[in-house]
Length: 628
Image (cartoon, rainbow, N blue to C red; front, side):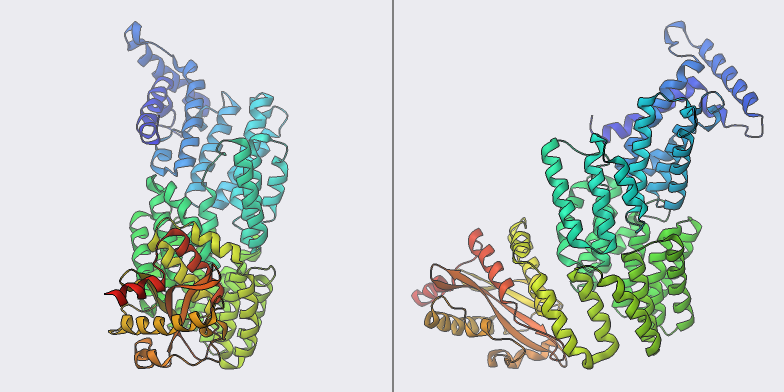
């Protein structure tokens, strides 16, 4: 039975069993003594039972309790996998039956914990899960046999690990170690460990564990428990790190999960963060606004992440008043819904918006509040690092150089603790903003390090994994922009009738005459390539920091904006002892910022295009043009 059918039948089945057991009546009068209320419940249930025709009498009240508990457990599992809060709210409480059986109380705690977890009330979920473990540790084991007790303990431990890892809590690793001997949870053990390292900022270690997960899944030939749930914490970590490539890669898994309604706002969030990181704030705002239409505070697990991303994008667009108004409203909603941990991410985004809007006192209070809460919790890694970064930005926007240096140093201690190129770049941008041109020398050194860390195999794999030519072109341009330090650009591919614009970033419309300038530049580069054979043309061998913009584009630089330049970059690669040109990127640069030619990325993109047959070689185009 598929998920939709299961969702349709489950409430009716549970309700029928509840009716048999008298479950709804059990909660009608909470002021009554517990045993007296149970007695009244069974009395009413027995009356209904006897009122039925004999051939419809299946279960009397006491006999219906066991299937009721089983139905609740199965429904809770469905709720967790589907993030189906509406279905969870329809589930009956088994708390009134606890005097009859301690195990029913445990089931009720489990169900309540799942509900708190999928509504992002993580502290409450942790407390409920810990209460389950404490109850099962008592001598009577809550009346469960050893098999059911072990199954419950391992399931709850796994749930705790999945909650604590994205919170940056070291206890997550203890949960993972406690599950290592349980074969059913081997994939989950590695997922918990992966998420912990990811939220610590150690993306390289996290990547190793991701590969281990893939191998385990192949070996086991099946799906793990809570399949796909880790993607929420994974994509939000990449988004917080401004890791464009990994956000893009995670989108595929989220798109598959988005057949379920609760995953649609997660997909919009992921797309919004992808656009934000690549500089397309207008598209980001559209996606995040749609996500907020689909999710509300206390009714969706990722609402806080969506809300905070919305504030960041408004702030990036210069809409500071709108950002602060929206952020304050989101914070009120989060407080009302008791989303304690999630409030911190909203506070961090809102602090920066208030600082930009000139309200230093409010900005400092928000950032300091988030830092205090995270330190009190014991959260390490990304969450506290982002709070330090926000506090540094507040100081920067307030003109407090001493405070900026203090908080930027604390941010550095977190972001540079592991070899995470995205976080190092993030801190580098913060320092450039804080120190201006005087930091360019240091930035040049760090940028070189980051570019060296962007592995060739990783770029090639990401490009080849794209599902269609348009997506490959967009990702290729994102790589070129990120590698070079440009602020945007245009990407042209060579087709039978000449160069065609296939992707753009940072600027809404190409200027009139750009395509003609691209065609002319490609002719020049082709002549150069024919004279050098298998060597790259001069424009790819020379650092752009010392190469002047081609005169072909000098009349078009006004479209890049004041103080910006256009810089051509040939997309080509060595093939059969010759240099094959397949396209041209026109990158928009800021001459005051570090920049270098992204030759390696251009070569990988060219090979991906060439191997897929998506482009025509420049020689074929020029030959066809000559024949015409």
